[in-house]
Image 1 (cartoon, rainbow, N blue to C red):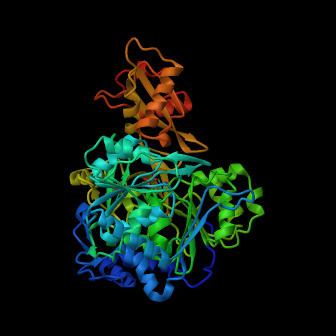
Image 2 (image 1 turned 90 degrees about the vertical axis):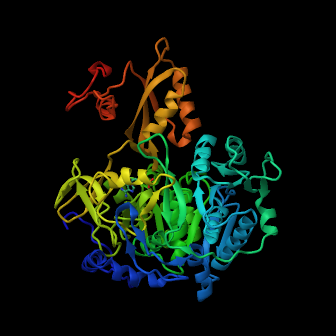
Image 3 (image 1 turned 135 degrees about the vertical axis):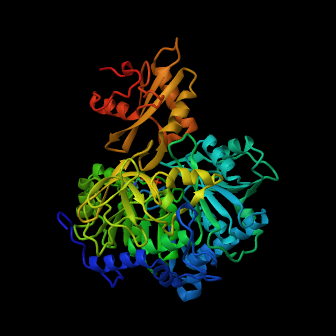
Length: 637
Ligand code: PRX
């Protein structure tokens, strides 16, 4: 392949040692899915093996039907039973450090200790009334109890719904209500950037607005005082003191395993539902093939377990592979960006898996700090969540990887469950800026705007042309919406919402979203959610939001606002709009700028032409076809 970086030789035997092996296995995974996956699922523990690999098609596809299993048993008990119980499973460190930059707290769990902690919490949850199929909302800071809570739900066959601990009460309430969670797991608070932040009070505010929440389990983390509702609230430490460990509850392959709310093109986030067996198989097998994680290894994925990358590669992927996972409290920039290199030196991970946003922060910090640290444990580098610019890719490989480590750029999304397109580290020639080739069972395609599939070199919408194991089961509470959103516009295919180009070697280059979703610091934010928060400001009659390229955050949010007659644009209104967005959507969505316009550009059917606004904001001009514009005076010439 031209312009490609040859993969390094594998440091130990791998199943896919070269491109020919990849091509053979990938072709077989598409030609004979039944045989291909049947061989690969033998490594998991099934209470009842599946009758078939796949049944049905499109959004109705069911993976491994007839099977029964438990994910926490596959992630924990099976390693303990295999004699691996004393190996490290979870390595956590606090954000607070001493004068020597040593974390004030380090907690290490072996597989046995983690299994025991999970079984005990599962017993406590059962005593609070949690049963298989119940949804449990988890809103915890980044502490070991977060993965423990997830795995405890999975142990009971309950459905976890993890909500990021930085969301405002309204966003938490929406997610509690939509998932119909009667039980919430939280903490008094957490630590971020050297300061405590409250969490229980956010849960209290949300719970006051719904009759739904009957039990709140509260972890003591900061020790700050909290309000208490007797009967409803229970301390974590008291609940586990009184609990008896719970054994894993086998569930059907297609039982819902978890929900993850994510933004789409409407104002309402959707609860992406993932099933049990298909998700588990793809999470584990991509942890093996993309990151080469095996029993005894240590992986470090910098993602907060509260997001999909954290679910799959901070929690489930490594543990299902028998590898340990490193988890760090707080964002990594505290006390400074060199903390990451301290973490590598201390915990000696073989994999460093991060995001372009974080890598750009490391580049800005300069490499003096990393050059004096021992990074020799690293064997593989990985990136996810946003397009990685080739310059950033090269810096990662050269400076962090010493020019010798593979860089695995993984493309996927919340709906995908696990990595879908990535270079096999020792087989696929890497292309800086391209996620390259699809994983086993993934048939990637490019479609034009009319939904016609294109052959050969092409650019257009990225689609997935058949069901894959980790695929979403649906949108929680709205089966029709799943079909309409993803499976209706290109016959037989799943529409990803990304634009992409396929080159002459079949490699995929991601070109950004085709819908109204923007990525800020790797977080997926729907423009409609921000617009809804902007128009909630009493002075604002209409709003349109666009993402602008931003060196730091990937994209930055620009809010256009049209004011009600008689209202004056002012710094105060601007501040009010920013506050409204922070309160309703969260600090993640804090706008960089607000601009006032007399009207928004719309087409004749009333659709806001965000493309024009974006172009105008970036270049100061509008090119191309503006004939559909209803009121061209909306944009200055
Ligand atoms: O636009 C793509 C971008 O992130 C979107 C998915 O976001 P989310 O559901 O939050 O999941 C993030 C973690 C998997 C995609 O639709 N994206 C993700 N990975 C890449 C990417 N864009 C370019 N290159 C990637 N490697």
